[in-house]
Image (cartoon, rainbow, N blue to C red):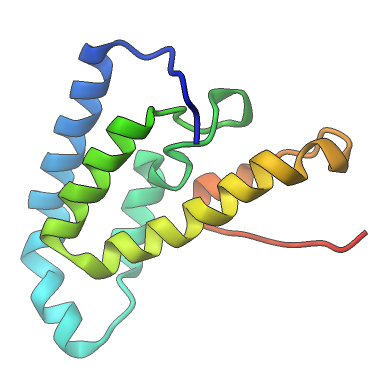
Length: 126
C-alpha cells in the first residue's frame, strides 16, 4: 500500500463521495437479494472495476489510484457497512495486487499488473 499520495484531501473526499453514491445506488438495493441467492455480484464487481477499486492502493505509476492507507480504510469501512461480501471481493484482489506490486514487478522486467485494476490476477512461474 502506498505510504504517500499525491492526491489532495479534496480529491480523496471526492473519491469517498463517489464511493458512497455508488454504494447507495448500485449495491444497497441489491445486496440482500443477492446474498440470499448466494450469487456472485458480477454487475457490482464490474462497476467496482470501472471505479478503480481493484487498484485503489496500487501506485499511479502502475495504473492504480494510489490512495493513502487512510482513504483505503475509509473505503473498506463504507463498503463493509453496506455489504460485507463485496468488501471481501475487492480486498482479496488488492492483497494480491499489492504483493505483485511489491515483490513481483521488478523481477518481471518491467511487466506491470494492469489486470489488478480489472479485478483479475494471473500468476506465472519463472
